[in-house]
Image (tube, rainbow, N blue to C red; front, side, top):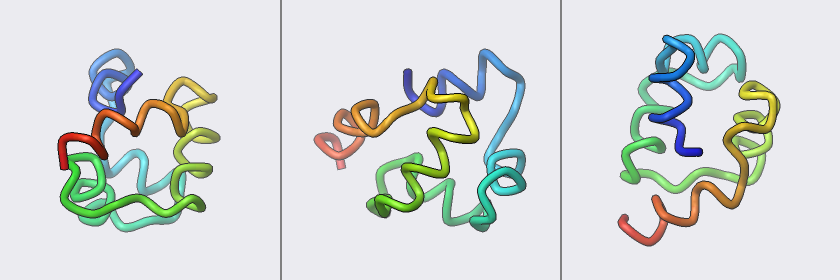
Length: 66
């Protein structure tokens, strides 16, 4: 599941994820749009925050598009 899909299904956004992960919402926005590559630490934080609904493997498509 992409992060965008997770946001839509759960009615949340980058600001919500920022509160869950400790990363700034602007940074998360850049990562989500493929403008900045995510660190492994960030990917782990996102997986935890989304209850493993968005995992490392879900970022492959974003990396391929970027």
